[in-house]
Length: 292
Image (cartoon, rainbow, N blue to C red; front, side, top):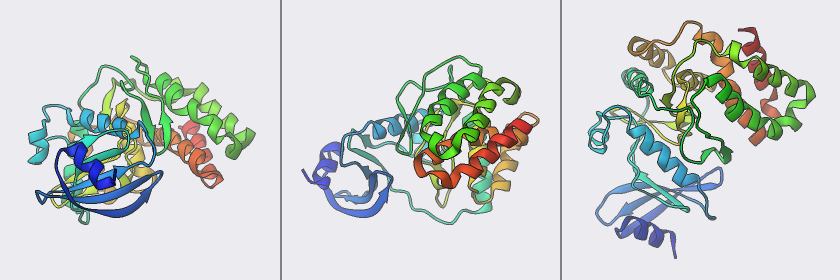
């Protein structure tokens, strides 16, 4: 079965053309035109995987925040996530979104919408599906909390073995020290928030009307995590995003000092995926977390 045939069977609509857009991790990316004239984005895998079903579940779950519905997302008033058109173990299909340069106005809107998304409170930390971050499994065991223990057990400890060879014994001890003091470092207790979970700038798609969230590692987590991830590798108009976020739903005092703690998980993931090039940044984050 060709890619076009598989896509047609999944959507129940004939496909006119499929254009390859390159690769991301183990997946290949495509733009497809349906016979209706509609354009869609397609992510495919050569081998069966649970990644796409997990991503689809995360997008749908984020889209349910507050009073968001499929109709409200379509008309730009719901949660800032695309509608999942189809997903299986080889393919994920989303609407095609035309990208544009991010503007201050779009960033301000995004800050407000992110705060509103975080205001939706799931019952548990974690999520009821198998998680992934990039090409690595992401533990999502659900628990009532506190967040500090959940973060240590589900986001830090699982990635130490994969990072150990690059961090070295001293680096491992430093991260273990953070884990040992996690309850003191985590700040005021908060209930779970509906968060994206991997909110670096590459997972924000800027359209003419608004910013849209893609490629989530969605779960019930701490809302400071998404803000910390935005800052980790830089996001356009980050000052505008933060300003309208805080106007809408302020973070607890001391959030800036806790940013390195929330950045420690994605940095450990980068060490596990890409090696020692992220060692210094990871150990700097651990040191800063301990000093907060």
